[in-house]
Image (cartoon, rainbow, N blue to C red):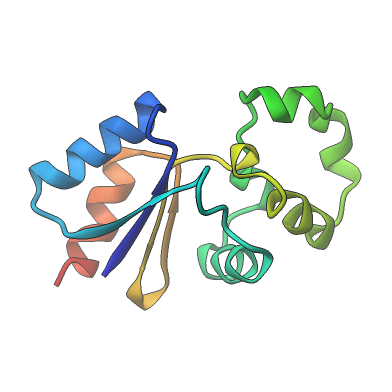
Length: 122
């Protein structure tokens, strides 16, 4: 089963959710504001995704900008980044889609989702 972690008011999240519905891909919905990912989840997702840690940050978000993370992020360790991400779901790039078999998709890129979900939706 896929877990769809999103902020319901986010238009990109809405677009991704519609995409999942249109393809009849079942998922469990998780509101990132009500159930922020914890450190252990983030560590596991980061490891499984093989993405750079910066990809997990919502670089256009208000929290990111207010903390001046553009300047701080390059000198932060992965550990520090994961600890920070666990403090506020609004720091995370959304949506995040997590599935069995190690599928972790951060942000909505239709071609990436299509490529990864056709093998995971079995």
